[in-house]
Length: 191
Ligand SMILES: [Fe+2]
Image (cartoon, rainbow, N blue to C red; front, side):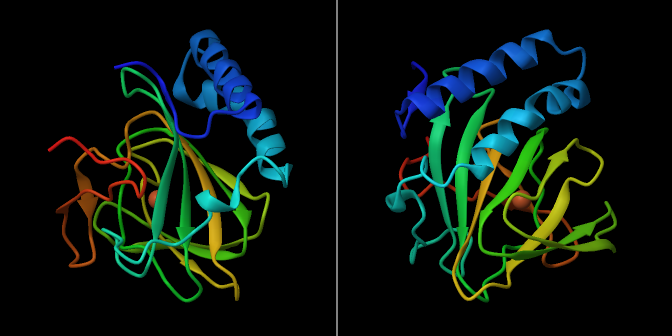
């Protein structure tokens, strides 16, 4: 299986090439996130690179609430993905984990994010505006939920070091871990 560019543009190819160099040159996930930050901020600030077709909700969402997860890039070895998560107004994701480190940032709309500890107790709540982003460095802060607070859908950009849409991870809406696979709108997962 080769690298997959579902959004095959110079912007995405150059961004991914740079990220790969930065990961290869970093001594730890935290250092890699720091190296990637400026390029990620640039991507979030660029209003033109993400076509409208990747900013649409998904009525058949595996996550419920019309949430759409659009794959933009996936590495051949599934060690890196770039995807857009579309959360309609008023909708919220389940409480979920990611099981991989990376960066998540808001591109459009506004969100409230709730962060939980491993006992699924709420530890932090923060409001996010376009351009805001954060690093996920599991096991710290890996469990959260986001809710769209804007009148338009929120669009967040995820750069994570697994095949987040297809791996089996966990939702915690019942207060304990349940098997959870979010899927992608535009790519089927192997069963
Ligand atoms: Fe998430």
